Image (cartoon, rainbow over all chains, first blue to last red; front, side, top):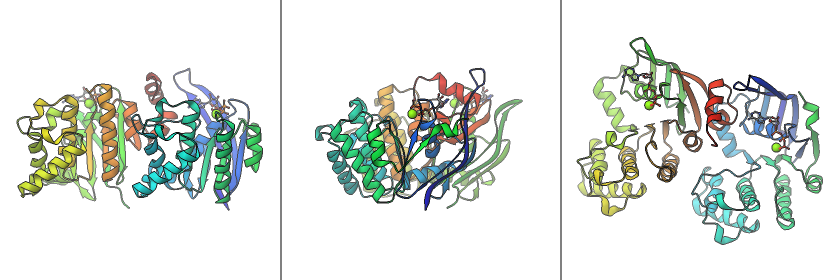
Length: 225
Length: 251
Ligand SMILES: Nc1ncnc2c1ncn2[C@@H]1O[C@H](COP(=O)(O)OP(=O)(O)OP(=O)(O)O)[C@@H](O)[C@H]1O
Ligand SMILES: Nc1ncnc2c1ncn2[C@@H]1O[C@H](COP(=O)(O)OP(=O)(O)OP(=O)(O)O)[C@@H](O)[C@H]1O
Ligand SMILES: [Mg+2]
Ligand SMILES: [Mg+2]
C-alpha cells in the first residue's frame, strides 16, 4: 500500500521583488512510497531535495499536481487538515531545530505526544527514554536547546521526530553532524520505524547510512525543470 | 465538526476611504488565526467589525450558527461577555484601573452569574497564578503593576469565564522583548489547554509564527494572501507578502 503518492507535481519560485525572477525547481514529479519503505533523495546542492520534503510537509505550496499523504492531499488541503496530518500521521526531522524560546528540552521532545492527548507523565517518560537513548546528558533536559551544540540540537530534533509512531516520516540529513555512536542510534531508530511500517523519505549525504536504510534512491535530476 | 465563526464579504468604509473590504473566512474550533499587514492596512478595523465594536457596512458574521449582525444590542453584549473575549493592545482599555486585580477577574465571573464570594476569590486567585501573578498581589490595583503584569491581568480577566473565541489586537505590542516572549509562552499554553479559537492582529511575524495556525495578510483593506502560517511565511506567493517577510531579519 502506498502511503505517499505524488503525481505530476511542479514547483517554481517567483521572486516578485527581484525583478519577478522565476526559479523553476522541479516539474512533473511522480513518486510513491509504500509502508515500511525508505526512499532516499539524491542530487547536487540546489537540486531541490529539501524543497520536495517541504512540499510533502505542506510548508511549500505545490504549483500543480497532487501530494496524497496518508489520505490527505497536501497540495489542496485546508490549513487545519495539514495540521491534523502533521499532528497524527506525519513527522518531519528538519535539517535545523527551530523551537519556541524558553521551553525546556524535555518539553520540546514531549510536545508532539502532548498535543495528541497522551497523558503528561507518559509523554515525559517517553521523552526521557529517547533523550537517554540519544545520549543527551540529563543536566541539559531542563534547559532550552537554543544554546546547545549543533549535534545536540540535531539529536533533540530527532528525539522530537521519533517520539510518536507515525505512518510517514521525512528526514532531512538526520545523521549529518553526529559522531559514530549517535549515528548508529539514529540508524537503528530508522530501522525500527521501517519495521513498524513507517514510510520514509530521507536525504542522506552519508553514503553508508544511505546504503543501510534506503530501499530505493531517487535522482532529483529526473525532475529537473 | 462545523466552523465556529463564519465571515462573508465583510466591508467597512470611513466615508469614501476603505477600512476593510471583501473579507471572507471560516474559523474552526480550536483554530488560531493571525492577521498581519502594514500600518493602516485595516487590521484593527476588521477586528472591530468582527468583535462587534463597529458595525460593518456590508457582509455577514455568524458565530456558532447565529447571525451576529442581526442580534439585538443586549444579546450581542451578552455574547461578548460570555462566549467571546477581547484583549486590547493597551491593558488600560481592557482593565478597570480603579478596581483590585482580584476584582478585575472576579467582576467577570459575577457578570456571568457567579455569586459565592469564596468561590469567586478562589477562582480569581487560581487565574492570577496561571498568568504568573503572585497571590499576594490580589488586592493591588493594576496601576501598581508593570505593563507586562497588566497585560497578563487583562488576559486572566478575559479568559476566566471560559470563552470560546478570543480577539486580540497587538497583545504583545508596547512590551519589551523578554516580557513579550514570556507572555507569548503563556498565551500559547492557555490557548492550547483551553482549546480556544482566536484571532490575533499583530505586525510581528515572530508572534504569528509562534501562536497562529493560519495567517491572513492584509494590504489596503484587502486580504492579499491567506493560508497555513509556516507556508505563508516560508513560501509567500503575493509580492506584498514577500516584501513583508524579506523585510524582517529572521522569523
Ligand atoms: N523559499 C524559497 N524561496 C525561493 N527559492 C527557494 C526557496 N527554497 C528553495 N529555493 C530554491 O530552490 C532550489 C532548491 O533548493 P533546495 O533547498 O531544495 O536544494 P537542496 O537540494 O536541498 O540543496 P542542499 O543539498 O544544498 O540542501 C534552490 O535554487 C533554492 O534557492
Ligand atoms: N475612525 C476612523 N475614521 C476614519 N478613518 C479611519 C478610522 N479608523 C481607521 N481609519 C482608516 O482606515 C484604515 C485602516 O485603519 P486600521 O486602524 O484598521 O489599520 P491597522 O491595520 O490596524 O493599522 P495599525 O497597524 O497602524 O494599527 C486607515 O487608512 C485608517 O486611517
Ligand atoms: Mg537541502
Ligand atoms: Mg491597528
